[in-house]
Amino acid sequence: MKSPQFAFLESSLSLGRLSHAYLFSGTERELKDHATVQFLQLLLSDACGSCRTCLQIASFQHPDLALVEPLEGEGKMRITIDQVRELKYRLSLASYGGGHKVALLKRADLMASDAQSSLLKLLEEPLGQTVCILSVDHSDLLLDTIRSRTQEIQFRARKDRTADSLKHGSLRARFKQAKELGEGEKEAQEEALFALASEARSRLLAASLHGTPEEMRRAGILAVLGLKAEEAFVLGRGSLRLALEQAYMEL
Ligand SMILES: [Zn+2]
Image 1 (cartoon, rainbow, N blue to C red):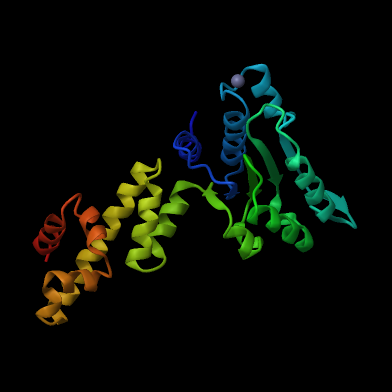
Image 2: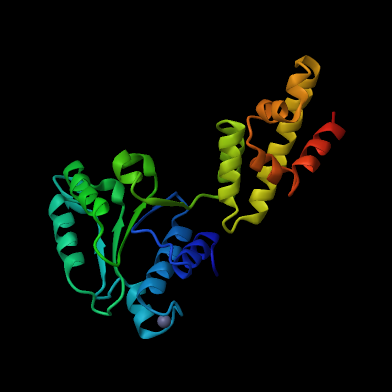
């Protein structure tokens, strides 16, 4: 089965918009691990999931795949700087299949800080067709500089994501989140937009009771909502006028 996360990665590849580094984050491990293997099979094989190469990849045995996992040392599990150096060396070699070379760092949050700095150099200057996948439960355990150089793909239960996108930040920030949910998450996006539209209506109601006439003109309304015209357009399902009419009808 295709998860929305995998569907997004698949379309990124087909559109030629693959990132050099991905951060797979979240505690939905089964979903995350499954999408990881599917993505590796897509990059290094034919993604059928059942041929010899795909099966090799599923057990992380492929000459163009470098797997890095934490090692035990001094009573702690750690990814060390030596492991990152060896990874960089492996990625610098020519690709066996002539295509992508992929690094998978499992539990990347267990990278020692010198290892993270060493990895950062690789993310800053990616080599050819290399793709780095950092897999973590919680992305906030990584250096900000690493996070900012990766594209984060979240693996969290949908209800958590939707709840988050509805609760935090300004209307605009949440609208942006709702738009991003759209990459394969139509239903959650609908829910989020509906909730945002209701909140927008209550803000307009408050403004109409207490605001000035200027605020109730078009530009004022957008300001009250803290939205740009384009965003109100989408809230109104394709029409700014419809968005405003809907809002007025509810007042
Ligand atoms: Zn296959």
